[in-house]
Image (cartoon, rainbow, N blue to C red; front, side, top):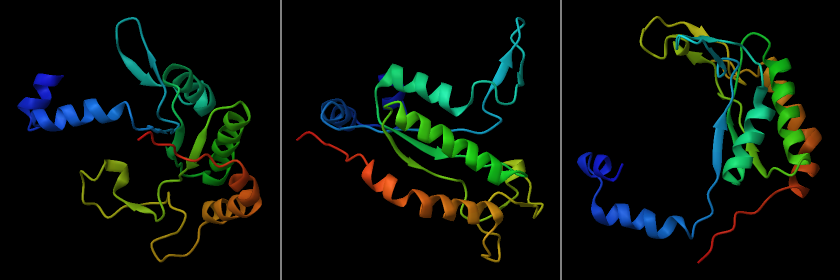
Length: 169
């Protein structure tokens, strides 16, 4: 890896900075979760989407057990059915917090609907992908309304359960 980094522009000084400072810095692990994350691997090596088998809770609990880092649920969405998916993801995050996993935040992606997201921006088709908390006219969507409701309902709990980021000097 060291040679790869040097071959691709990292200087020796930059590499050593990370080596010297990583031990002192408190890291956060971010993980995304979508219904398309989980796949079945067949004996011949072929893979196929499996839908949700384990879910965010099980996978994130495994990450935490392995890395022992605070976690940020960095990205999720689904269309249609965003409100139900948001409720489920939020419940998973809350359960993880109750089980002692330091969850630092939660993000629905994205704020606005996406255009051509279904093709990973490879085609300029102008197709609106209705995934946002707001539509392209900046009007709140049902999932946006639900997200706002979650924040209002959980505001005090979130504040009392907040974790501070600690950096060693």
